[in-house]
Length: 317
Image 1 (cartoon, one colour):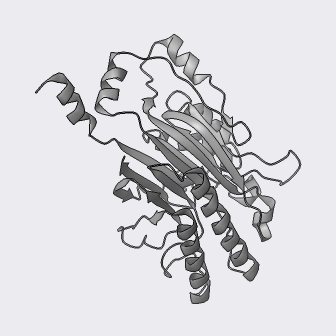
Image 2 (tube, one colour):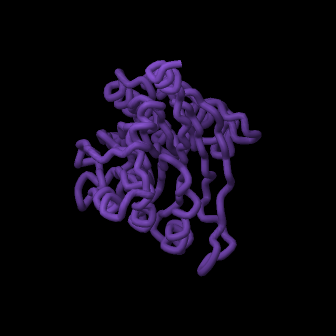
């Protein structure tokens, strides 16, 4: 087999990437457990092995996590408050990636009710270049130049260029031709009151249209987040059957508007989890629930780092 043919054959392979989703429960101290700083400082150890990280409720101490992972996940996007005065809290959304983030798009939900009214909930969309993976083993000068890149937030949309290349990168590009993937992170309306149901439905329409408009040409799209809803009526998060029906209806609206498909969860007891993924154009390998780690030292030792499960999506692109 000649070299050109070998490259063509190997180039047909797919990358397998892991995407971690975690609602970190980093609310201001009195609203959680008054131990957010200590918990935030331990979170990076448990998420560093994954390619792309989607965090929810990182309202406080997000910089601890971002800085701790700067050498492995230098590409970062956040969704800040619309202005310094209001809402009181930002979105709590963070995206960290080993792969280069080319573009950032954002939307802030127009309707939020009750407690969610005080948080700038919305969604971050990032376009990721899977042919440009940061390699920490580069020289100190190269590592420093990448690690010091500015964080991308929702008001600084743009692109990065990385002209560095070596034999290893060229070999990888031969095996895996350049490909982009659009990934969205969100945290949607909570609660079961009539107003909260209406807000969640409106958010489903807004988010679905946001994804459809920005990713209508994308061959691979993934949405992850604490959606506060799911595809089935059974969930520990729902108050009753009527609450479940309203949330399932809104979930259907999100699927219809976005053009994404639900990722079926086969883990027992997790089919109705509200922390979940929707996809298009990727092959789902597995959905995993690795368990919530506990605080190893200091205040709160032995208690869970978060009140929500970690969810890991493994896909081939």
